[in-house]
Length: 344
Image 1: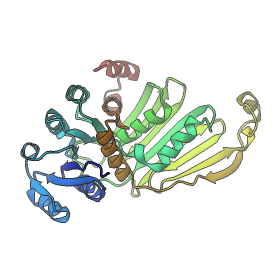
Image 2: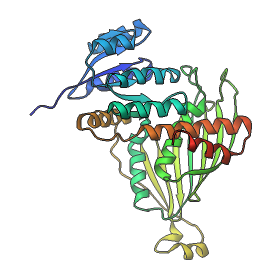
Image 3: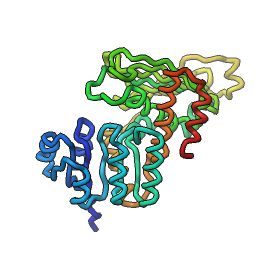
Image 4: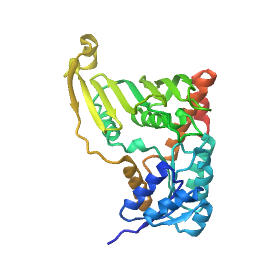
C-alpha cells in the first residue's frame, strides 16, 4: 500500500533554503509543491530546477496551496510572522534556528501550535549529526563514567550572508542545544567574554565558561574570525575522553589507561594516563536529510518531533543570556533565573 504523499514548501531560498528544497525534492512520498522568496528571480531559478510553483508572498502561497508542511528559512526577524501564519492555517512547521527573534515570540509559537494541533520543530541540525547521535548513546551508557568537562569549538571565516545576528545567535545556539541535549542539567553559572572585530553591528567572537548544576564545566569557543572551519566537541570523564568532529562525522575515544577496571576512588589515587585511542565506526549521513526525514515522519505518524519548540526556546534564552552577560557584566545567576521564569 502506497503512503500518503506529503505536500511541502520552502519559504526563503537563500543558501540553506535551497538545500531544504533539494532534500524535499529528493525524498520519497514527499512532493515539493512550491518555493517562496521576496527575491522572485531566486525563487524562479530554484523552481525551474525542481518543477514547482513560485511565490513572492508566503501568504499568497498558503492561501493557494494545500500544504502539509513547510520549512521557514527566512532571516530571524521574520521567523515569528511567517511561522505564525503557517500555524494559523494548520500547516506543520519546521523553523530554522533560532526559533524566533525573542523568547516571548518563541513561547507564542509553541502555544499557537498546541492550540492548532500542529507540529512545531526547530532546525537544530546537529541533533541529526551521526557523530553526535553516537556520542549521546555512549554517554547514556555511561561509557565515560562521571563527566567532568565538555568543550565545544565552532569557528570559521566570516560569513557574508549573515547580517541580522551575531555569533551567539548564529553559532552558539547550535552548541547550547547540543550541550543541553548531552548533559541534561541546567546551567547555574556563566562567564562570558565577547567582542566585535569585523561585524558591523554584532559580536563576532565569544568565549563562554559554564557551570552545570550537576558539576560539569562547559567551555564554548565560537567565532567568525578563524581562517578555517572547525566544528569539534570534546567530553572528558573519569574513563577518558570522546572527541566528535561535526564535519567528518568521526567520533574518537581516548582511553584513560589508569581507569581500566578501577572505580573512581582508586582513580583519584592512580591519576590519569594515556591509553588507547579508538575511532568508532559510524555510518555517515547528511544531517539535513535526516532532519527533514524525521520531520516528515513526525507529520505522517503524529509523533513528537526530535527537537521541540521548548528546546528551541531554551537554546535561544541561553544565547540571549550569553550576549547580555558579555555586554553588561550582570551576574549570570540573576539572568538565568529570569530567563527560566519566562514563559514557564
